[in-house]
Image 1 (cartoon, rainbow, N blue to C red):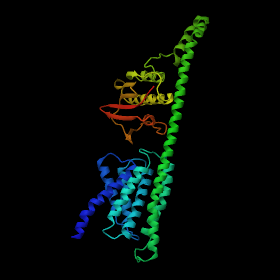
Image 2 (image 1 turned 90 degrees about the vertical axis):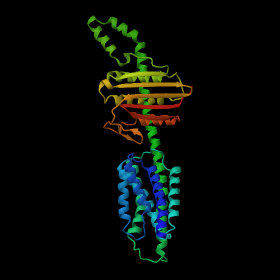
Image 3 (image 1 turned 60 degrees about the vertical axis):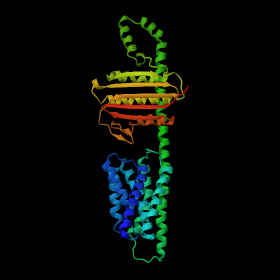
Image 4 (image 1 turned 180 degrees about the vertical axis):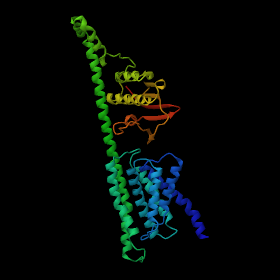
Length: 411
């Protein structure tokens, strides 16, 4: 009767512990959206946190860690290296605490310490864990995997290599307790390492995006300067044209007409940066037979850096153009609506798209072959919007991709 009552009380508590473990895991690695994958992952977390682990007990640990690794690979996104590292980090911590609870606490009293442990671990992750949607390079993940080998090795050595037949007064019990405690506390060091590396990586990405934005703006500014210079020199071109023989005039005029700086420049709005970006992209839009619908009201000035304003709209248009190029010409259409008033810059751009779009961490993944050089468009937009304390939303469906963002914009 007591055993039945114990299991009736213990089962929901164990489910709660498994849920807390899954939340800890989700902070370190993204979950996939399919329900069946998340169910398998929860089962793996529930099994990991509830498995009985004794020092010197060979039976339970090996199959549990294999099952947990399988569920992480099925239910989580990210690279194989990331999933392996995170799974072993969480597993080594769980096994170390389970071995402490099962070897040093009385049966029937170990559930409250487990609830307390995983709740504290979850709160620790919430407050001091890495930022949302963080990214680490493969060398960083390899470093973390190497650091994880120490606590994991301690747990495996104590559980798999020692004999379970010893008296509780044996001095080895104290040394085992200390080693298991070190293995548990090492998770704090690993968490701190992940957080520091994630912040460092984000700073590197911000610096790369800033350099890209600055270079793009400088190139655009140079192009606009060339436009003004050539038009200013038009009188000189006309004088040269008058002095040329008749048989050379036509070829000279043809060269002037086909200069990029001689193409038509349309006035879309008062803001010179936004106007220059759209004029720079309009040639590609026309060459691709993309229908462009636009409504813009952006006055000159504003609180944004010119390079960031340039990068914002350049990436917005680049992503829309890239999506349209995958479609037949008759289906290519972009609608751009921008308003800057009442302290906000509001933009909505929608474009036709292929319905089969893969996403990762909430952002569509580029289909270009060189993913190291591409795929930063939406991430760049999100980075700029968040830097100015704005919000960005993405909607897909019915052959349409819609990007909406707003941010504080004042003069």
